[in-house]
Image 1 (tube, rainbow over the protein chains, first blue to last red):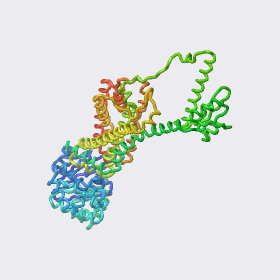
Image 2 (image 1 turned 60 degrees about the vertical axis):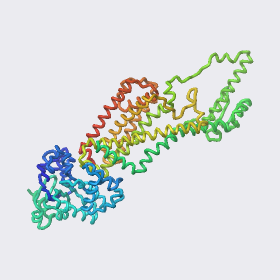
Image 3 (image 1 turned 90 degrees about the horizontal axis):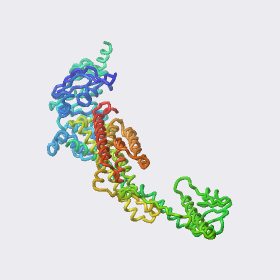
Image 4 (image 1 turned 120 degrees about the horizontal axis):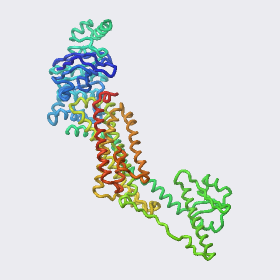
Length: 242
Length: 395
């Protein structure tokens, strides 16, 4: 699970994240929603040990970010919209490369690739191709397969559907729901509210680095009279007024 | 350790898949080196020989018939021209010879280095010199004086440099130059691809999120760059040595036109070092490569894109070529031991001294210790760059 407490991140005078706290339980998909520049990516990078919080604490899968970075990374996978994999390598070589960091070799690796391929509805035959010869959708599936190959307890998805066509996007949203059903902890960060409505159990609205609202999906929909987008705008207006 | 090798293997695999890069790093140096190094000499040698064998027109004004005859014997075609200088300038003739008021003036097109006209001017001057000496001898004999009186002693110049230096020939200059150039140029594409390239393509974040300590990522990438740097350097040296052998064997005649002191110029040269000398070269090059590679990784990671990284790293090559340029004047200063503490400069100086057989144990020890310390600092700097999020996510 994830426990983020009073997270701050500053870049000189600019505060990208201001006092963000939330928890995500196993089997739950937490939607971190907000416009571009709200601080979603920064928050997820802190969870993934890629950047250090200026203040606050985070525990991921029982390990403390900062002090136990390697343990956190062993139990976590991250995918973001801008993430790519090595284009001159074949899909199989990419998965072998990342699998080797989690002691996945030989038959164990083969089994995990088959598992990921089934979960992502990915044609294993295409893995023999170099990544640069693959479609964008297939490339994104490799990016995700790389992140879940070690079956991480925690999976962070940041604008993961960016640039995907309708089929690849559908496959990804289906995957998110399937992965959560395995008892995994997911954070789904997006600015596309309709996606969050489909896959998230709980949501948090992030604006200018602050978490201005969090609650269950049902509560958020109620706030927005059935629309997550309306709920988000209303909440932001309330915050600005106060 | 395993992760370092896995990362290095991945970087090298990406390089191997890029045929264009493989060709320019490993194949081109082998093919190009002989051409670049020996091509100009072969061309010049061939031109010089042809100039000696062929007959060239020379505009003449006011010269005696006896000299005209001498010019003809030397395979020159003297023709009277009203304006010899203009004839030379307009390329109607290769040279001109004018006699006026007791002075012979030779005209040629002498701007722009080794020209055909310059070679013909030398041919004319040689005829004039012989003509003059013969006239002096005849006049002295007419006065009953022995012409030998004008030459009371002989002057001879001989090369007294060390046997290794003499054998090395051009290599004494070329080896430091090639090592510096190819260590950087061979490693640069891999260093840039492994840093700025990964940032630009969006692959770095996934690697940094893997459970691999940062130092192993830095060392893995550094190892891949080192392998390509050394392979590229080796390819260029193989090209140089093999090319030198082939050129010497097949083009002996045009090369005979070039002499160095009292013997023919050894194009490409040949190293005459003890095994320890070769080891010293390898160790110096390896330490130098570590320093350069770590600098390239730091600069590459700081850059936002492939192009930006190239613009940061290219000046590094110019900086490294400075010591090479200074080497040209090495004879005018006596290297002090402290020179061998200066990063980059010391390696070039040490390589030059090793090839010439002039390196002292103190100089080598200072070079290796200093380069090792500076390489260590540069590797630490690269590691720190990978730790700095404002550098890693600067895109």
